[in-house]
Length: 344
Image (cartoon, rainbow, N blue to C red; front, side, top):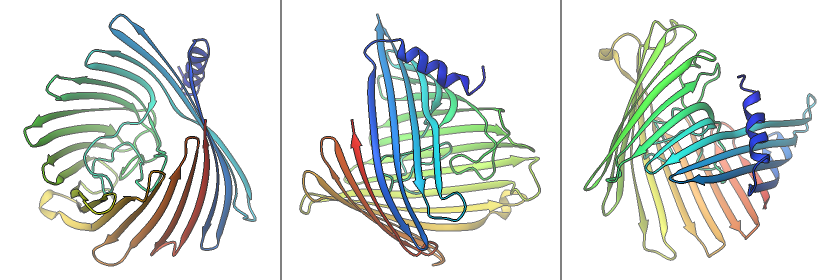
């Protein structure tokens, strides 16, 4: 069955069922960024249905995301885009789940600088956590001691996803697994993935550990090995992120997160591994009151070449939310965005 027919089939199934949970988000936004002026509107539709048969639970979901914007450019001043954002079918039993469809797969403890950002494009600055999904089959099993096993198969795309170094071969099957196991002071996990490229193959291995004590701390790593790839592709790539978070008992509670990530590549063998980048990140969140929250996210290359600072204010009512973002970076100089959303 072609990819384009699957969302339509799911929508037909969902509409034929009763008790469908329908959610809509209508947003208006204005963006000012250097010489770029943009005003636009978004509509996000989400349909979900759940049914239970004895010890099994079935779920179906479909999400549509559409965007209309005017950029005041000479070419294509008015742009419109509408695409299926998510579609999935899920079958759940006690402690297990099997999910098929266009879905989000993400894991790991790091929040800003994420070596294990293999399949998603999540950004902490985005209040709605919009991310590209992947066409996949995902199986998850959870044991009573909180250990869990993930197995997945993904349909490859000829565009990069997550933090891919290069795209995969279009429509080629990718496979991977993750095993997470708890300890008295935290959780440790190992992840693996392999994919076919237009030329060659890549093998990935990830290790991560989170400690929960007086403070939260984590270590997240990822390594890739390219075989028979294009000449400009390094033989090895590696990255590691070390982070911690803590809530200071001041006012309503100041939540702080600090991360550092070191990345490197080796053109021929591991003995030639050299540093490619070293980045630090700081995130601060503070609830001013019941409705208002302010945040700050700052990133910087420790070599001093690039940096980015974003400050945000959010107010949330029952059905309406307001988001104001101010930003400054070494590339875009400044950014100002205001978004007003209606959630029904």
